[in-house]
Image (cartoon, rainbow, N blue to C red; front, side, top):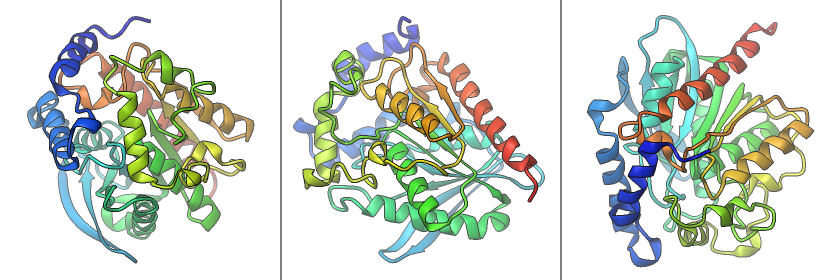
Amino acid sequence: MPLDPDLARLLVVLEGAEVVRYADSSIDHARAAHDASVARLTPPALRAQVREISEHTVSSPAGGVPVRVYRPEHDGPTPTILWFHGGGWCTGSLDTGDVMARDICRALPATVVSVAYRLAPENPWPSATDDGLAALSWVIDSAAHLGGDRRTVVVGGDSAGGNIAASVVQQARDAGLAVAAQLLVYPLLDLDVDRTDRYPSLLTYAEGFALPPENLRIAVRQYVPDVAHLADPRISPLRQPHLAGLPPTVVSVAECDPIRDHGWAYAEALRHADVPVTLHDGLGLIHGSFDLIGSAPGVRAELDRVLDSLREALTRVISRPL
């Protein structure tokens, strides 16, 4: 399917001036550019309105983990979504994650807890997943106080945040922590990003689609300095051989995305393990599309479909006998 026309026009701008090449940029510049790009392309005035936003700090062995809690215009308990922003583990913030957090909060509706996990290279793996597990434990314990429902705790994230979410869910299963569902949005799930034989989309959409291949390689190297660890399932959830017992999963990929095939492969592997999966193909979309709702209104319908699938998965969870 052809690119969404708004995204096609936007790519011309992005490739001309907006896309930061990690090889030519300092980490501070890349972080500032990521924040500025999201703020410009979907400014606050175009973001979903929610009832209440509050800031909290989650205790963890490494210190405090900042989180931002979004409450919807809804009476009574809601699902609670633990959300991890994207940014290649090196950039992104609560502010870049604000677009998706607000939308999920309003549309589902849900209480959303967005996590400011520690960033690489200052804090390489497993810092982000350690922060994620600490935040998940806090959310499970605090769901009722936050206005949520501990029976319907969801873990989700986009891009590198999808990687963190998938890893956290796998480790939560092994630790006996209850997760009702997971939402993985254009997730990066195998950190050997040169496996083009297994994931041909890495070649098909390598250039001109807002996710340069050198950015992927540099981000991975910053997050996991020792390449010998890339096959560890806690780093590359697609390498996990034991997927049975994971919660119902919604996977949302973008058709024109170098890492599209990661989501496809994970959805297939989960099905083989008898995990309920809904896969959305994101026809005509690019990596990061949902952050660009303010500049590309056509992505709205796809996000609505994705959240409908999550709502259906949670409805099935709630209907089970306690």
